[in-house]
Image 1 (tube, helix red, strand yellow):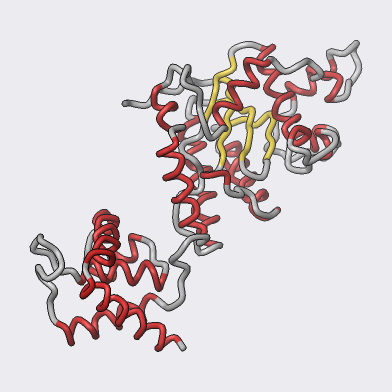
Image 2 (cartoon, one colour):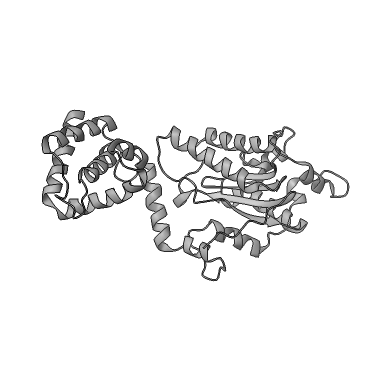
Length: 328
C-alpha cells in the first residue's frame, strides 16, 4: 500500500517525532544529543525549518517546527540518516536505528499549537526526568526559561504568547498551563507505542504494530546492537583466509549440500563471516563475491543446512575451530 502523503507546504506548522527501533536508547550521551541538535541547526541555517520547541528523551524526540519551504520530509530524512550513520559508525554497529520514517501531524490552529508546546515540554516531567520542564537540559523549555538561547531556536512566537498575560512577560508555565487535550495525547501515544489499536484507519500503521513485525523489529535491533550471537571474535580477513584455504583443500561444493546448482561455499562463507567476524551483509557480499541482497537467503540456507546435514555441520565446525585456534 502506498504511503499516505504528508500534508506539508510552505509556512506550515508540524509536530514531528520519532523513536528508536525496539525502544533501544537513541541518545546515549550528551555528545549524541549535541550532534542531533547540530543537524537541526543546519536545516535551520539552510532556510528549510524553524524550530520552536523540542525535547530529546532517552528513546525518542519531539519537535514543533515550521516548514519554511514545504520540504519537511527531506529535512527530517537528512537529520535521521546523518544521525544514524554517525551513531552506527562510532559504535561499530550495523542496522536500523529509527523505527522508520518520522511521524508528523500538521497544526492548523493556534489552540492545537499551544497544546503541542505543553505536551513537548511536559514530556520530561511525565518520564520522571525532571521535576519542572525548564530543568530538562535537552529541551527548549530549558532555554526559554533563561536568557541564553541557541540562535537556531526560534522563540518569537512563544515569547509573544508569554507577553499576552496582562502585558507582562509571564513564565512558560503560566502561558502554557492549558490542560492537554486527551484526544491529542492519545494520538501521540498511539504513534509512539509498540502496539496500535485496530480502530486506526491507516492500515499500514496497523500492520506496523502487528506482533510479527514488532518481533522482527526487536530482533533486528538486538542483532544490530550485538546483544545476540555474532559478536565479532575474529577479524574478517582471518575468517575469509581460512575459507579460501579450505576451498583449495576441499574443492567446489556444487550440488553437494543443496539441490540447486549452487556452490555451498557461499552459504558457509556467509555463515562464518556473520558468526565469527560479525560482518554486515554488504561486507559479506564483497568477501564471498555475491550481491548483498542475496546474503539473507544464504544465511537462511546456512542455518537450515547446519540442522539437516551432518557433513555440512562437520565442515562448518572444522573451519570455525581453525579460526578460533588461530585467534588464540
